[in-house]
Image (cartoon, rainbow, N blue to C red; front, side):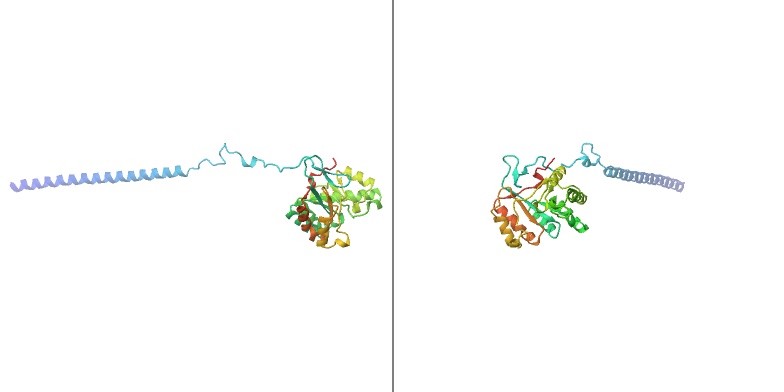
Length: 292
């Protein structure tokens, strides 16, 4: 009887212990489930935060308050709208109004572009000395020479008409004079994109017809004050530079005649510097008054 009671007691204890164990296992499963849910929730939250950080922000292109750069116009280059100088009856440069600098001279180069015109233009460009290059049409019959003229023009130098074949205009009739002048105007326009505003006749010889034609074309008729590079005594760089700077004909507004020549190209830098040392500056041809 006692054994049976003990057996029954032990069985009851075993049942109680088994029930407790099941309860603990259930609690562990619940805890693991809660941990898993917590980890999953944390991962989802991190993912959402990451997505929020990577969302594109408002760019400058979408900013309505930012001006459209493509629609901003560049400020135009300042251009002189009123001439400052004119050519007088002695072919000198004179101010149109009082107060404009009188201590100036004008550089002109004839017979371009034969051999040295591009080199001379580069020298003048480096020295910041403007000039007019008067061209002859027969020097523009090759692509190489046309390209040289184009480069001279693109460096900012004025281009003038010196006739097509360099004749003495008084020796040819009016129709030939017209052809000499207008055919070169057409050629220059074809090469550089604009017609010349300046004309100088070969040997300085004009006719009544050529004067009227030049005026009707809106070109400024021009001769010169002095020049020496065709004379034998001045066909060396040193002699020519000295003469151009120290001649008795050098005055305010002098219109300087030079040519596309080897010795002139070699003397050009000394001529420019020598004239500046004497207090002269150089007229920009774009400030000269030309016919309407």
